[in-house]
Amino acid sequence: MAVPHRFLTGGVLPSTVTRDVRRATADDVWAVHEIARESWHDAYDEILGPETVDDVVDDWYAIGDLESSISEAEGRDDVAFLVAEGRDEPAGGGSRSETNANCRGFAHAVPWPEDTSVAFLARLYVHPASWNEGIGTALLERLEADLSGSFDRLRLAVLADNEIGISFYESTGFERVATRKNDLGDGLEEHVYERSLSRERSG
Image 1 (cartoon, rainbow, N blue to C red):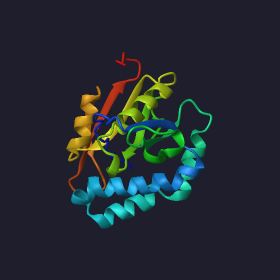
Image 2: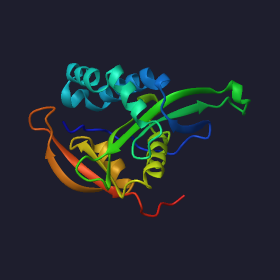
Image 3: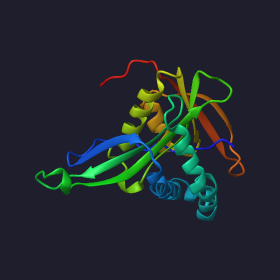
């Protein structure tokens, strides 16, 4: 089944929020699961209905499967499972011990089975409470840096009704290469996007 995923807009990051992107560990499994549930409900309730969203998350983001995916990514250059932490700094500054570090988003990419030069972005989500803080963009940038030595292109799929996701993909250099049916519901379509991992990136 092709998985439709929603990128969240990488807005301007407020000066009071910092981001850390790192490899996921087994300790992140429940946070990833809950981020997926909250993001899916916000993105897809109106398209699929809340009951279907719960069923999909329980199936595609089962705890055991997430543990396996995170474990599989350890020590590999061709698989990446990343999480982003956002720290809310105290007003007027403060010591590191006064910050609140927590998981805000995650991204997971694997080799495309039919083309060894292509990585597939299986999922990238940010908790709705942290949208427009630049976390989605930070995850994407780290993902591309980690995968550029193993692949030439990054591919993803997004529901055709997901205007926010489509806008984000296109604003970050992805180009639409195909449109196909999606089997999550009758009449649903998804767009396939790609971008080069070797192209010059600013910053």
